[in-house]
Image (cartoon, rainbow, N blue to C red; front, side, top):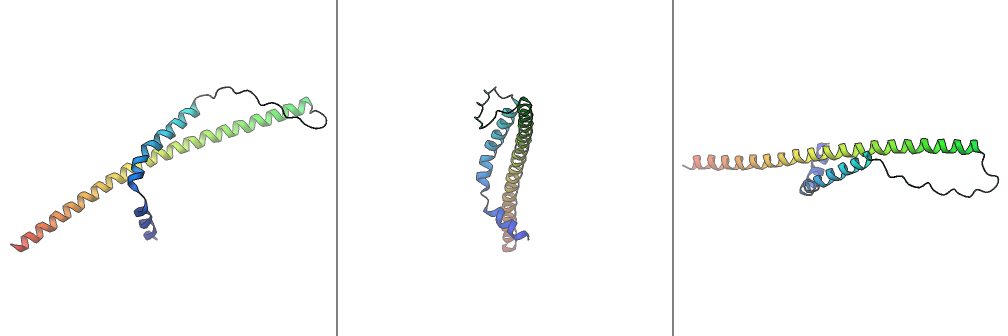
Length: 126
């Protein structure tokens, strides 16, 4: 089961991920900032022509209340999604930093192992 994960990790272009992580994080932060600022007032849409008798005032009020509730629900959902996106971007940035650190440590370990191997070969050759 671990083999597919290793293959997937080798296929990922980590250099590109590391390069683009700050851009993703900045875009997520900008999205969060836009969500926090109140939206500019937009003019209401023009009423649609309905065939038949016009709706009563009570029906219009009910439709308006339902529409406001839907808009509030959508705004809440959008804010939650933006928050989640920002959190994921921050986690991704931390993950990229950790992976980069591990790559550097692995290279250092390989160099140290090579130096030790050369040292052992040199000792036996004397």
